[in-house]
Length: 339
Ligand code: SF4
Picture 1 (tube, rainbow, N blue to C red):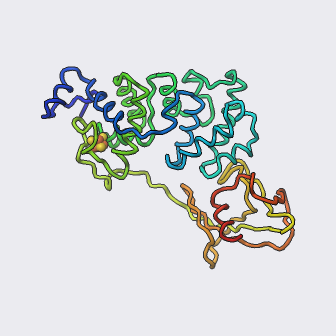
Picture 2: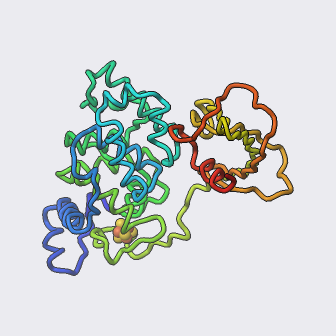
């Protein structure tokens, strides 16, 4: 088992042997930094050290793919150019700006965090790691990323990609989070450049050493990785995510003069705080096929539209157009099919 960044000194390549000895554990970072400078994707959040921008990118990237985040990231700052603008916006406006990114709880956290920055941190993103951790939606890994990228601290990122790389690199498939945090801290402390180190570890996990495949041939740590050329992704333990099928009747109240009737969903639960037509959860699966199926991480939503002819009751409002309202993607897709 490796004890430093690259304690296996068995490479037969003279260049690498030279690098690996005697100055352990520096060589692996050198190889990794060289790899990163050649292969890193050009991403806009990598070209700034503004904590507001880095923070938004980190939250967007938590559960949304890079290609989706790319243009939404830039749009965000057109809508909310400053922390102050974000803090003073309405929740509806923030949810609208988040539309399509999913996991809307993140948008509410961002909004509350911005308000805390105004109230408690002089309108600035806090510089201290412990203060970052007080903000809603920012955990140790996200704080580690922001703190290292913006302030150069030796604070590791430990997201799913980095966990996988460390487990494979050090052949610790069963390592606990506690063990991985220790390991992540050790390797970033040895790296000499924590900001770039965090970036390259995330990049390695997102590209060369991904969950689907390990491209060990092209990997900068294959000379010292304890799992190099031995990864069998089909045998790796993955947490099974149980997906529950739910069946929802979507009550469509529409009127040429008034538009469509929408209600705002409660803050907690699926699509919290977003606007939708009234929804009833069905106990049994209807005989008809759903008009639209929308997949969430733990739920598969089967949507059955029902054109209501009566006047709607309860809290809600007629809106002439859904423009300006934050609707979930599943409802957008359904409306595209039925209207
Ligand atoms: S050598 Fe292979 S298993 Fe090891 S970190 Fe690189 S890609 Fe992953």
